Amino acid sequence: MNIGELYDRSIASTYDRDERGLLSGGRDLAFRQIEKFVPADEIRNILDLAVGTGQSLVAMQTLFPHAALHGIDLSEEMLSIAKTKLTFHSIHDDVANTDRHFAQNSMNLLLMHFLTTFVDGEEVLKRTAKFLQPNGYYSIVSSTFEAFPRIYSLARMLFSEEFIREKNPAPASTETILSFCANAGLEIVSVERFTKKVSFTDFEDFYSFGMSSGFFTHVLSELDEAQVAGLAGMEGVFPLEDEYCASVVLARRPR
Ligand SMILES: C[S@@+](CC[C@H](N)C(=O)[O-])C[C@H]1O[C@@H](n2cnc3c(N)ncnc32)[C@H](O)[C@@H]1O
Image 1 (cartoon, rainbow, N blue to C red):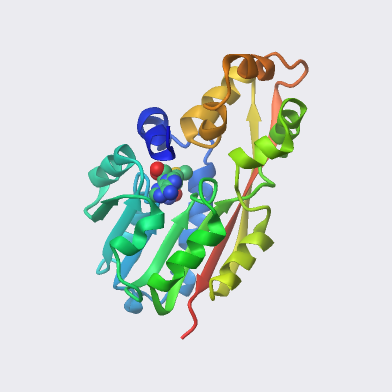
Image 2 (tube, rainbow, N blue to C red):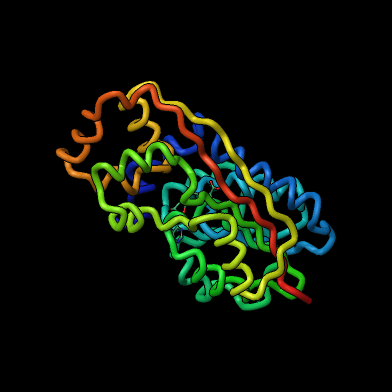
C-alpha cells in the first residue's frame, strides 16, 4: 500500500483531531515566521506540497487573501477534506511530479509541512525550489529523527537500526534540513524548533495515537502481528514520557 492509500484508509478521517497538538504546534510556528518575514504584497501564488487536509492553506488564505492557492497530495481523502475548508487548485499526484502541473519560477511561496517523513527531503527540495520565483519563500516544517527518543530506543530492542531508518527517513536534525536548503540554492531566513512533551498511558494509547495521527502509521502498519505483540508485551515501559520535536525553517530563493 502506498502512502496515499494509507492516508485514504487509515488516517484521513482522524488526522485533524491532532489530539496532542503536535501538528498545530509546528505549523503555528511556521505561520508566525511567514507573517513576520514574507512581504504580503509580493505573494500571488502559493503551492502547498502535500497539502493534506488543507490546514496550512487555510492559514495562508487569511494571511494572503488575494493569492491563488495550489495544493498537491497523494491522498484523495485528505484532498477531499481540504476541499470542504477552502477553494484551491487541487492536484492529486506525487510531489515528484510537480513539474507536470506547474511551471518553473511560478510560485512566490512554497509550503512543505510534515512531508519529509515520507520522502527524500533533500531530493524534493532540490526538485521544487525551481518553482519559486527569485526572492520567493520556502516554508518547511519537518519532524527530525530526534523526535520520540524513548520510543525509538525501545524500537531498537526489537528492530534493526536499518529497518527503523528505512521506515522513518526523517532528516537527522535541523542542521540536516539547513544543508538540504543550501544544496537547493536557498538562503535561510529564520529557524525555529518546536518541542513538546508527550505521554502515553499504555500500549493501546500509543498504538491508537501512532495509527490515527499519521506519526507512526507507516511504521506500525508494516509490522506483523508477532511484532506488534512484541511491542505490546514489553514490560515496565508504560506509562511512557517522551518528547516530540520538529524543525521549522523559512528559506528564500536569492534574487
Ligand atoms: C503528515 S501529512 C501533512 C499534511 C499537511 N502538510 C499538514 O501540515 O497537515 C502528510 C501528507 O503527505 C502526503 N504525501 C506523502 N507522500 C507524498 C508524496 N510523495 N507526494 C504527495 N503527497 C504525499 C500524504 O498523503 C499526507 O496527506
